[in-house]
Structures are given as structure tokens and as C-alpha cells.
Length: 101
Image 1 (cartoon, helix red, strand yellow):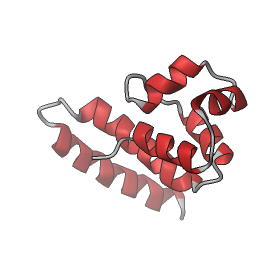
Image 2 (image 1 turned 180 degrees about the vertical axis):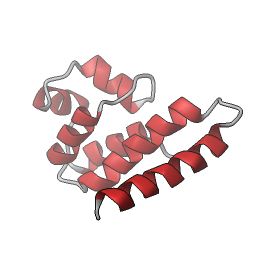
Image 3 (image 1 turned 180 degrees about the horizontal axis):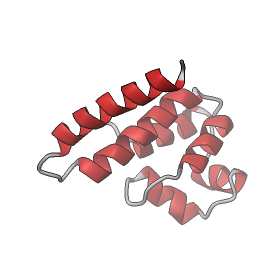
Image 4 (image 1 turned 45 degrees about the horizontal axis):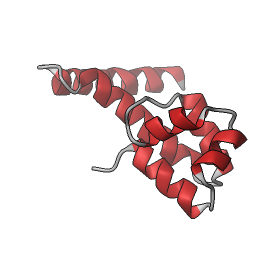
């Protein structure tokens, strides 16, 4: 399974940025960006948005990937993680439906 870090590394390379140039462009330490791409450190949503803009790619898809990794990190080791996710999905749908009335 591809991780957000690997996806962002691919996008960086496709956009023609070296690790150093990308890090300078978004004002982050090169070592930190490298660790994020390798999955050793977590991305922030703000950073994902900056990288999406820098690489001129679909922001929505990257934010969805970021959120899915965040959920996986929180629930991945939990015994009832999948069940909790199903309950959360129902609650989120209910909340969204009631906020748009």
C-alpha cells in the first residue's frame, strides 16, 4: 500500500524538484521532509496543502490521503478500530445531513 510520503515523493520527482529545493520552497528542514517522505514522521495538513500547491497537483486527493493515514494511525492497532470507524462514519453522515437543512 502506498503511503502519503511515497506519493508526495513521486509528485516531487515528477514536478522536477530535488528534496533540497522542495524543502526550501516550503520553508522546512531537508531532514524533516526526508523523514516525512519515508514515513518516519507525520505530515501536517498545512504542509500537505503547501506541497500540493508547489507540485501543482490535486489538493483534495492529497488531503483525503492525509486524513486516511491520520485515522489509520489512531485506529490501526485498536481491537475495535473498524467498528469504531463504522460508528464514526454514521455519525459524520448524520451530522453533515443535519447541518445542510
